[in-house]
Image (cartoon, rainbow, N blue to C red; front, side, top):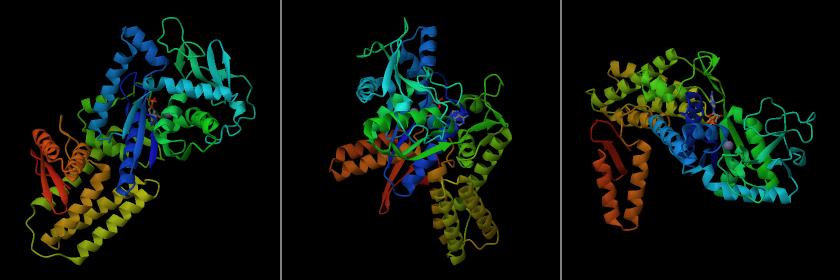
Length: 449
Ligand code: AMP
Ligand code: ZN
């Protein structure tokens, strides 16, 4: 699966609305892998735009130094939310040469024009314009154009491919003059460079459908004459207590703001993941408390599974309940990532099994199937482990285990050993079994396969 995600613009801390979208992408990633797809997932980091230039120059920092701070902060926040790192995370400013080449090619095709040193894409020259957002282009004025990366109104206009540098601004040299790439061309170029001319999946938040993704399609398809993406998945917005999040309303939260109030990253992750991505998500602090309670229920259930003294034996009834729950869980996620249904299946399961445990009808031999169900659930939702600063994530450990396996296959035993030692130094204990390598954190009782 070749998947592209529009990543953050690194001019300040990423807010929880953004993280709604990134969490949806993480659930999508994990479920595709769960279903056996191999992923090649690219996410860009937008590290050049008007806001960045303005703020960097206000602080006197270079563009790189300024964006590096927020890029690092994003990575740290993403780790706390256990967002798996895409196979490739790429910066716009590392790809400017390729963007220049793409713009030149669009020029050769006669789809551009110049004005005041900037280069614009003429959307009238691309007949399919508007097909994703279904925007009405009938009243479009030829030559009406925008420079800014955010449109004021939802009307179609020619957009900027290359923006002429104003005095004092950072710039790159190009045949059409000193300047910098527009936001839209960044994504087209990086997506196609790493994933080829047609992607399987392109994701983002709904605000990107128009104009950003419409413009990505126009540029890319004009260049290749092939469909740009087979599937577009857009997450609906996160609202705060029913209102649009905004600084002026005083309801604007970064992840840090929420964690500083004492909520756990798992509770935030759970809440963000619990509402199917096609629905608006109403973020409230009450809902965050309920999320924490829900996680507690699951953790208590797991503790009970591990610690209750049980009679020997195994019951067919428990196995059947587990299979039913797993079917519901998977069919929910199969249905366009209906996370609400998947969670409902797990909680129904926990409720039923708790009742059977109380009645003494859950036997020692039933432990394995119940654990396996929890592990499957947690391979997607990932909320059972308590976050600890500095601890490796399950995903990072899994990647290290895979690398160690590959080293062993290549008979590079010293490298394999080194990986085991590196993990041990970070508090992760490996155990090789016939079913594969299991691991656990040395400082807790929990383990995973
Ligand atoms: P940006 O850093 O502004 O480019 O946004 C990063 C991602 O967050 C994009 O996919 C946006 O569509 C998404 N996004 C922005 N605001 C919200 C919100 N309130 N709820 C959900 N997603 C959002
Ligand atoms: Zn993009």
